[in-house]
Amino acid sequence: MSEQQTRPTPLTPPTRRSRPLNRRNVLTRSSRFGPNMTPMVDVTLVILIFFMASASIAGHEWFLRAQLPEVQDPDLVSSGFSLPTPMLSAELFVRDGAVYVRGFGDAPRPIGAVIEQIRNMDDELAAGLILGIRAGDDVPYSAVVSLHDAAAFREMRVAIR
Amino acid sequence: MRNRSIISGEGAGARINVTPMIDVVMVLIVFYLLVGQLAIDRKASIDLPISAIGIDETQESDPIVVGITQSGSLTINGVDFDADRFVGEIEGMHARSPNTPIRIRAHRDAPFGHIRPVMHQLRDIGISGVELVTERGS
Image 1: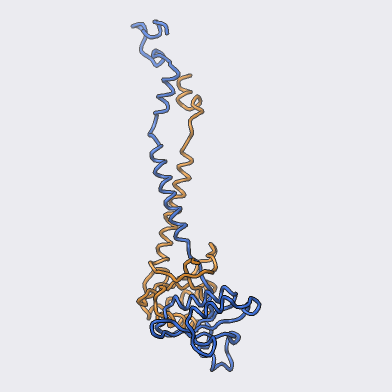
Image 2 (image 1 turned 60 degrees about the horizontal axis):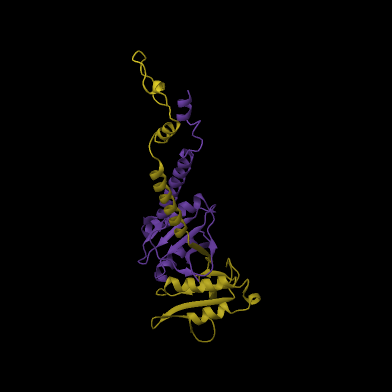
């Protein structure tokens, strides 16, 4: 760099050009111009990933379809019944703290055995059947859903009474 | 002029303009915030029963969500209703949009004695089927 460039004459007013034009210095200054966005981008991306993960966790739900027949008691059906007569009927009740099912076999059976029986049914036999579920007041809702789940697994339609 | 052109960006072609990216990211965050808030409104803290099979939710459907807690408290789309107002509210909603599905989110340990009356009330106002929300399980 020449001495003339670094030392302007006293008559010349100071200008930008009077300062040394070093390309590297200009680039460095320009890169520091304005706020540093990097931390903000980092935080923003972390928040975004958090919300995406939360949304995916909250989405682990699905549903089972159940019909609500118009007539509660199938024994009283003679006319006006909106559904075909269920070919299977299950009545859930609680005995000694366990849930039993009446309607599958001669004697009431534990719900676990009935679920296994439904799951092991022949596909052709089960498909298209309607399972009518009736449950006592003290039967936990999860037991009703378990039976419904097994029936849906075999592509049965389910009506809850 | 050379100095100005470098500062204005012509000479700094290697720098990445992050402004559009931040715009997009901010829009996504706002979207997820809103969706999360709606999801919280709809999904009160209820332990759902588990099922190995089910039907996935579709984005098109905007169901009426009936919540039933273990103690039998009722909600519609996250808003508490007592048993007397529940029927009228559901009936009004169903009359306004009869094709809207009704989805029941009931606590897994709730006795069925709390759920059956709700189903019977729904049936009595002309609803022939409901969707029982469950948690994915094996």
